[in-house]
Image (cartoon, rainbow over all chains, first blue to last red):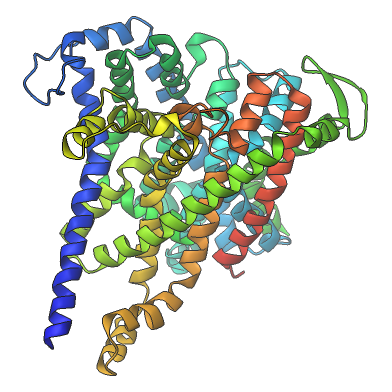
Length: 282
Length: 285
């Protein structure tokens, strides 16, 4: 290796290390600092220079957030997520199987429509107003099922995409043998396809759960009743409600990201795998 | 014949759901936008009056320009940084690579509201740690929110920060699919690392890169949360981008007629990216 090339290698390595440190600070600091702030009393909050660890932690901010009924809304959001995830799996698995194994008229255009729906749901802001006025007209707004319905529709295309990839890798002999043995269509999906596509199912479910939990725009306009509100619009609402009181604000933000961090720590590997599957293919 | 029935009953629920929530509202919205809308109620047909009112709004060109600047800058910067990071992670050992990936995607898996809120608290607030650090290290004050260039710069920064993880994950998967032999052959032929990257890696990454560009464009054009939480569109509309304009037109000013018209214009722009996306994923029947 020439001296020049060695020098270049050392400088790239330094650059990579510097970039990693910068990323850790930029990505980690807001979360660490947010959690620390949520545990501070008002005096500690306004101390200058800011205190990192030498303060007396208190749960006061969490009590103030809890007093607004925040935990009830966390439960609401959780129910929305569970309903959406169950719906996308129940609707998505038969569709994914049919798109891979059956040949039927319009199969390709129909599947392209599913693929096109993935980016359509990313651009949900443009769809928000049409969906809103349409659902107002149908009298669906401010009902308990409007948000799970919207969330399931947003997450379904990606689920079908990921599950179809899983079905592709199941050997045809397996389901053909089961069909010869006279298994029903539901039995085939439940006893053969479902167990064999478990990793993809986990990845798709996690993705759908996180997408639903984090959704803001539909949640902020489709429902009005306080008990129907998911938590993202509530956290946003706290900016106006608590003003510059960063204690309760960061407490609500911490609570809002807790389930996601929990999933992330427990299923980090499946999480990244799911993102890769969903991301590369679509 | 029997198999067709089975196939159609299997896929029908999926199309009922997406058709009802994603497609039929657009059709209704087109009809809706051609009528006189008073307080959310549909009045008589009035042709393109909503569109006319929209395009006569003198603030609209500015909003469009800001949207282009925000999306363009965010996408270019995100892709450039993501390329560097993913090449770096690609060379790491599996364990280190996993940890690096997790750190990189942290802002992306957090909701836009929470991520932007925490970002604002740490980096922008006058009693936050960042302004303290800048004050002690460099001296002077760190107040990007008080001028329009600073606010737009910050909005772009947060947009890049938030979505970098997505780009890294996709590009990493693309890098993994490049056969090692290609890289090795280039090395053997005496190419410098930079030449290998520019002449071998980059061309082979074309599809995942275009996919990232399309998805990032969609995500950035349609982001409401980030400007809403970070700046609220200010100062003096400096960060008022299209998605925020549509949202506020409908739910702050309650002009549903022109908001629907503008949302449909935005939807039409999205369609181009959707078509590009479908093409890039290159599904073979």
